[in-house]
Image (cartoon, rainbow, N blue to C red):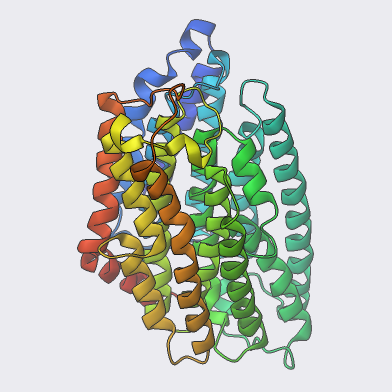
Length: 473
């Protein structure tokens, strides 16, 4: 059987990086230390081939693997996120030199699994790709220079991950028993009301728990702030962004079943409201910057639910656009955290004091990321929330839009609190100087431009996302 390799170029390029990292990881000690020489440049390859493969389409492997605009859109986002996290992690002070090749190997494996997850249109294929991306993260969270907090975070992530996996598999068995198929193309044709198919609806609810766990949606969020706090700053940047893309792409594929008025749709809407409310209220009392971003991700998971339950192509496009914007916004904030924390410690809000004097470019990038997460114009977050709120209005869940608007107002306090510390307070005399190298400033500038570009010129990306939403069955 002849298979055209062009549709699989993003996955193949990532697999090539994995193969090279594996050879380096099992090589000599001198070879393992040179991973930072070539990997940052090589990480740009998946971005290039992902953009090149945007027009590819096809159904492969007996209908379980689909190349379409949705999968290719998210593969571009995953490739960009992977490259940024690689550049960020090349200067990781808490990672031992003899672990660097292994660390980047696991990062690449996780990214590869997420790319395959984006094309999975069959439940078992989804599960296998999800676990491939997850197991790699279990290994690297603990890599923080023998830090006990990192070990605790890794244990929590593994334990919660094991429970969510078991529940998702249990739900899969109910779906198979109730609907007699695991292919999404057939499942979306079924009736998903509790009266018509109680076993299948119960199974789908359980299967969704695995996705909600990755997305850190309330009440499946308990691991999130602790893992962000315990993991190194660079690892937290990866965990906070790319796995969210994998969860969102699967939820978008399943969203055709979430018609407004269905029981499962109403449950998702309620969870979305609880998630954004709890996440924002919990973030108000945090002093650790990474815990603030952790509870922030809980809140943003709730916002994404608005697009998923709208039942329209515009809603799915808005969810796709917001997922990409969220990755850009969060990576911008984590870039600043990693560059300010030159010794790898966790930053408190007071550590940001006087940042505009010590590192003006980093202070500006932090302001851009924070303003975008709030949803202020002309940032990416503003356009993302505008698309979400517009797509969700008048589809049976207007109360959710109102709650989201109130929560956006609440979030202003703690997001702008970070900017307030950076611009209005003076640093203590013993505060370590941040990284003000050309590398640091270039990364901050590029990420800031990405966030501003998505906010000021969103039409091209959103039009493609709208095409994505239109082809989802």
